[in-house]
Length: 96
Image 1 (cartoon, rainbow, N blue to C red):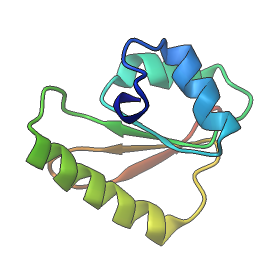
Image 2: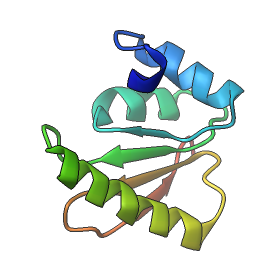
Image 3: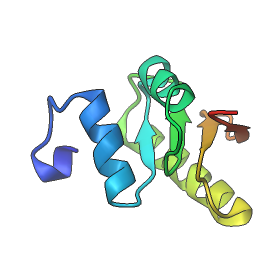
């Protein structure tokens, strides 16, 4: 949301906007976005970055790993991808 001047936007608003625009959310706010995914009937997918407080280069490295995992898998509708610095992707259907 930073690129859209949306810092401070609520998690629910980010989640809803991503769905409306057919986007995947990438976040280190694991707890809140996992909760939103569990209680949503449908969403476009979420990439949950396990570690918080990462530097720019570490964030970029994880996003590139996540992108490669998503490209190999395909569609992320109602799917959460958990990934961290170790680079091991773990996909989970949410809601189930």
